[in-house]
Amino acid sequence: MTNDAIWIVGGSSGIGREVALQYVDKGVKVIISARSEEKLAEIVALNPDMIESLPLDVTDESSVKLATYKLYANGNGPRTVILNAGTYAPMSFDHFSAEKAMRVMEVNYFGVVRVIERILPHLIVGQAGKIVVVASVAGYQGLPLSLAYGPSKAALINLCEGLRVELMGKGVTVQLVSPGFVKTPLTAGNKFPMPFLMEVKDAAARMIRGIEGDAFEVTFPRRFAFILKFIRMLPYAISLPLIRKGTGG
Image (cartoon, rainbow, N blue to C red; front, side, top):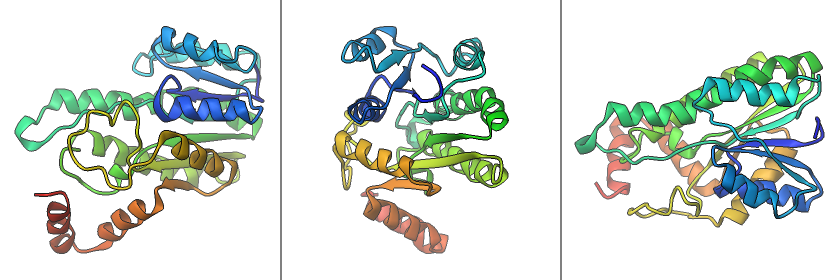
């Protein structure tokens, strides 16, 4: 596959998997990457003519280097890259762990940075490309139980804002996807209420519609995103007690 395919990093489960399958239904070829070769093979078996697998561990620099070399060494390579690899680990003050925070940041933030470092020069040379980074509405606002996850997504939001500005006029577009709660293996173990919880098929469909456009941020469900953005604009003296009350604190 060459530049007509869409490369999905973190495509073996959850939203990434569903996005891959929906693209295939639309006649678009996809390359899916993740650590688990077994899971990748299961998805490829669904449609070998349209899906190609490329095992990749975003926490391993040599793995990222090898994968991107395979895709871009001949001067071609995917022009649309969706960076969806991520992990979730709830963390609160009474189980505060620097190790856990660093582990989450290693996947969610530095994993994305490693891939961008390798693909960006190729996209700039071709003056064509789209980098889609999947963050989360958890990056908008500090939230209970999100002391490890939230900061990693906030870092992605800040990164994408800066890249979008710097790449204007370079032919490369950066898009930010900020989902709310979606029924995936990552959220299956949550013991707290998840407002506006979405089915993964609906979330993937909204994500694809957004990627087909040119808006900087694609977010869903919009009501939940609007509420968090509105709270973020309030003075801390109002917003932080409001968050505590709204989350059952």
